[in-house]
Image (cartoon, rainbow, N blue to C red):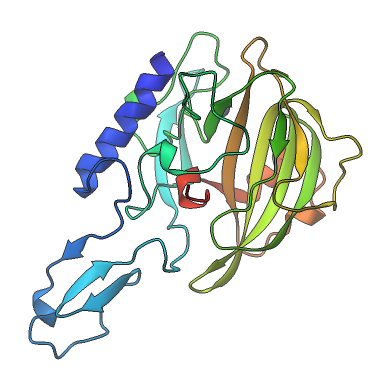
Length: 270
Ligand SMILES: [Zn+2]
């Protein structure tokens, strides 16, 4: 429960920070812009916002402005070292409520909730996830509890073009599959990877290069690398410019070639 309260606190913090309503769709945020009030400067809103009768309004999720910009953050790792890293926080127009999104397995084991521990790499160091048995501080994905052996359905991300492709099957976070997804963003297509960790097993015969259509089974829920905590660790990462995960052989190299991202920026909405 400790980790649960961390992600709930995370949501509350972000909501306060952006002044958006809790839960549901925090899609539209009106920003008074004196420069536009005379109506002469139509079209000069900042990137990601639209001009609307003399004000700039935040685009809603039906529009297409990419998954956000990378920002630096830092935390103390388990050995006490201060680690600075890139991460992409949740965009303000994406709902804070994890239940607003679709997931690859049914909700069930955590009082009907899908997510028991959420993304916290955008939070101050002291508010990130910690635990005596955890290998690392901070949490760069969502943890989805499920019964061992439950089939995991491939998901198509918001604004995804084409099918996903498998770029890694092996050991990373326990038994792990990494899939590649191309999203349509404002400046053109961008590649993301989804890291699926702690699987009981990948689907039989799954290998690098395999195309996965939405709904196809990519593996089963397990606790590999996370004994007795049966769940999927699902992490979304934006591939760095100029990098091609298909050319990388091991999971660590794919992590190095990508920037961790709040999954709510790319998960499909309910
Ligand atoms: Zn996790």
